[in-house]
Length: 263
Image 1 (cartoon, rainbow, N blue to C red):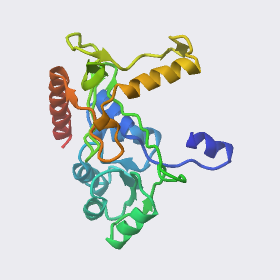
Image 2 (spheres, rainbow, N blue to C red):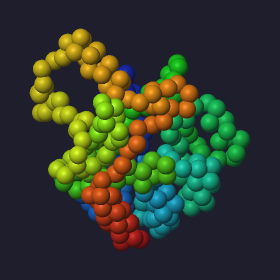
Image 3 (cartoon, rainbow, N blue to C red):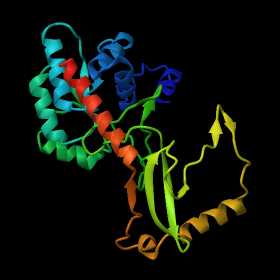
């Protein structure tokens, strides 16, 4: 990790928090505000990530605490949405707090943000620090101690609860996928996600290269020509189960209520 690298190099690690931490602490402590308070107990004054649910609402809450002398805050991080507009709004609320920005940034996007007079003091780069096209893989927290959680960041909304993907076929070709909760039993189709490691132990025999090759070839062959074509491919149709839709609405409501309560 970056923290371990810094320690081994004799440097002092610094940074902000992750969305998953905000979501986990919010679920356990009850609100985003309490998550911030818990984080500052271990990292006093450290920059806070404020776009997990509502960037401006979070900035307003922090501004009230900073102005009342109840909190010392060195910075906030924005990771989604219109960074130009949001940074200007956050600056008006927290004029003496540093604003950090991240989210698949590169030198071209940073130049665009600066030209638009974005009120950003520092940028976090990661995904695009590569030669060639980056593979952007991230994990999303969906449940903690049985409590479903979801992220509400602009253009980065996640669905709550542990899930499974059920794939249906017609004539050996993929018809569509259904995203459902992992414990739903009334969904037709073949489950695609498999548990392969549990408590550090492998659950299945290691596949040979020949077996992997055959399985992969069969999977690709099951896709339609429209999905496999290079120009304007058509993605596999994905539906959301009724139970998952119900959980999304329930989690959205609970999250909104928790945020209103803290105000």
